[in-house]
Structures are given as structure tokens and as C-alpha cells.
Amino acid sequence: MLQGLFFNEDCTDFFYARPKEGVTGTDVDAFVDRLAGLGVSALLVNTNAQRTNYASEVWEPFWTGYDPAGPDDQPVFRHLPADRIPDTRRLLDNMIALAAAGVDYPARMIERCRERGVQGWISLRMNDLHDVDLLDAPLLSAFWKSHPEFRRVPYRFQGWTDRALDYAHAEVRDHYLALIDESLARFDPDGLELDFLRFGYHFRIGHEREGGRILTQWLGQVRDRVRDWARRRGHEISLGVRVAADPIASRELGMNAVAWAREGLCDLVVPTPFWTTCDFDLPMELWRDLLAGTDTALGGGLECRYQPYPAAPARMVTPQEARGAAAHVWAGGAGVLYLFNYFESMHFGGAWTAEQYDQTLRAMGSLDGLVKLPRTHVVTFRDTPAPGVPVAHALPVQGPLCAFRLQTGPRPTSGTAEVVLGMEMPEGAVPPRVRVNDHLCEEGVLADGVQRTPVPLEALVDGITVIEVESTAPHPSITSVGVSIAP
Image 1 (tube, rainbow, N blue to C red):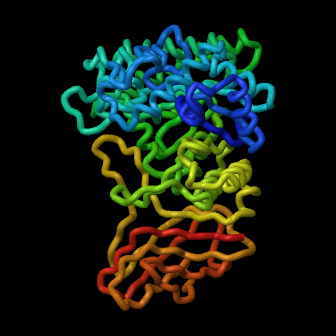
Image 2 (image 1 turned 180 degrees about the horizontal axis):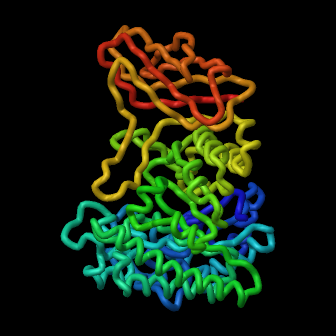
């Protein structure tokens, strides 16, 4: 059974994070070595957006049409904002330099993983939409640009997902099947992941259930190919899928992962948020029950951002928040904790120290490691609904009585805990009363819009924390809620 800490390395981070044309095969080895040293069990090497980061024979590489010696106003950059051109050139130059040196980036990653006792997977994004608003951006493929009739919402553009490819078209399925075939033949992975959450919308509006049946049948073809290559390689090759956090939303979007597991079409299901915010309320126990009786392992996906509600400001999660989200995943019965966008230099560079990054990733390998460190559990929202389903969010909220439900993992046996409320209160208002699991807490301290209320450990229970906030103010507004636990 698959288990442990899984780390997804996207198709660009490795190349963005290094000096121009300074990347070598030794850098690839060092990258794997670092993650292995932090306790990563499996490295998922993402090789594509709409193009590939290696010299593919079936898809265009990222650098197609780019002249490294040419000016910034060359055609490939004509619709790219000027401030993005230097970073994009570094990305492309590093990809070209590595390929020119004879280093097949994904193959080298997997080879080094095997040497270090880490599983090496290939992760494929099944509908990447970065920069589809720019039309001629370097990330976009000729296939996507030349087939507007294959887009799921051809009659408008109100957001990237309108321009996703519609898998109801056989040509779209064949386009991705070609990349799958090349990945299995060219590389020697321990697993193949189909990342359906990049970007999660694969069918025309209102045709998602019909599309789900098409996708299930198509996944059977992929499963047959994976099994065939496992026989040829002489070792197991797992097949994983990344899907929407909520099982109902996932099914309504055509990603019927429960049916896939019951039909034996996948070995790992990872419910996850898209990107907007880390989901601190992943329904892990429900997923576990739905997958019961199958041979499919369950993972829980963590994202790098924190946003309490759709209109709120966003930021990177803190180490304490990441540990809180991870503790909930393990406590919910998952066998795999899956990190997406947890890039040391790109997303957390400057947001976390190197020490915080190392400490947090090392702890994430087990629930035992996490409960020894301070952690925070916060209220967020679910960011991948089916069309026509409103985005549900508990915040912001107004009223004299509010209640919040958090999945907080194991009850601590030592240390301290507190409820932290982001508040908008009238000047001079009395801090609201806070109950935790029906226990009335001591009066909190309200300062600079934040109220901190100490919580006795005996008020906490395993798994769930229900917070009730009762105020004497006429219309208090609560904009964020969290429980901080410090063993």
C-alpha cells in the first residue's frame, strides 16, 4: 500500500530557481538528495503544462519558437508582460542548457530517486491553463491554439477554466494519451499520476456526468497501458489521480474517483484543493469510508496559500498552519500526505526560513512528528465547485452568535491552546465570549482587531473543535478564526 510524504515538483520550479544557464545534472541529483534528506517518500516529477520541460517527441517542448540569442521583442514573447520576460528567459535557457548537456531531466530525477530509496513518479497535468488569457504565450501549445472548437466554453471568456479542453472530444483524449505513452516508454517511473486538478474542469457545462463516463472508460485504457509497462519493466507502476477535495464535487465534475477505485482503475486517490487556499477541512474520513473495500490508497493534498474566504487577502501558509493541515490529513486516516506548490525557493522563499522549511517537512512524514510541534488550524473554504454550485464559505460572518467547526486532529496532552479571532468591533466593545466544545473559556484579550482567548486543554477533544462566539456588540464581524496549539 502506498504511504508516506509525497512531494510534487512542478514543471518550472527547478528551472526558475537556478541562475541562467547554470543548471547541470549534478543540480538534479542535489535536488533529489535534499528532499530525500527531509523524509520525502515519493517525488512526483511534473513534466508538462501545455508543453513539456524535456525534448519530447510527441508534444512541443517549452522552448519551441524561442531564440536564446534573440531580443526580448521576438514573436514568442509578444503577448507576455515585459516584467515577466527575464524570468521566462531564464526558465527556457535553463531547460535548453540541461537538454543540450545530454541530461534528460525527468529520467535523471527518477534515476536519482531510485538511488536514494525514494519513489520516482511522473506527474502529468491533464488540462493546464496557465496564460490562456494571453493567447500566444510561450506556455501554450499549438494544439490548444489551433483548436478553439475543443474548448469547454467556446462562447465566452470569464476565466481560465472557460478555455479548458473538453475531454468529450476523442482528439483531446488522444493528445494526452500520446504523452502518457511517451512517459511510460521513455522513463522508468515507480508511478504515473494523472493530475486532473490542473485545472479540474474537463467538460462542457451541464455535460459533466456524461463526460465522467467517458473519462472512466478512457482511464481504463490508461490502466491497461500502465500494467503492460509494469510487466515489461519487471516492477510495479502505480497509477494515481489528483481530484477535487469534495467527493460530490469531484463526481459532478466528471472525476468519479470512487468509481475508479471500485473498478480497480487507480492505486492512489488524492483529494485536494485547487490553489486558492489550503483546505483545512478535507473530508478525509468520508473519502476513507467511500474507498473502503478497494485496494486504492488515500492521500490528502495540501496547498501553499491561505485565504479565509474568497474576497479576503491571501498569503502563504505559515509553518504552524501547514502543520495543522497536515495533522488533520494524517488523523483522518490518509496513508499519504501530498504537498503541492511547497517549493522552498519559489513560494516559500522569504516567507519561511530554511530552518522552518526543514523542520516542517521532516515533521510532516508522520502524525507523531507533527504533534510535537506548534500547529494552527484555521477556517478556509472549498475552491473547486461544480458549475452552478455556489462557493460555500463560513467567513466573513456577522451576528451576536457564531459557530465554527474545525478538524484539529489529536487532542494535545500538554502545552497551551488558544482561539484567535480576526474581529471588526465597535470602539470600546467588550470582547465576545468564547466557548470551545461547550466549555466557557476565560475572557479574551482584544487588541488591534485580533482577540486571543486561552483554551484549557480539557476543553479539546480528538478530531473536532467547535467554537462558539457570543458577543454583546450589536453587529460584530468575524473575518478569520483559528485554533493555535503549542505542545
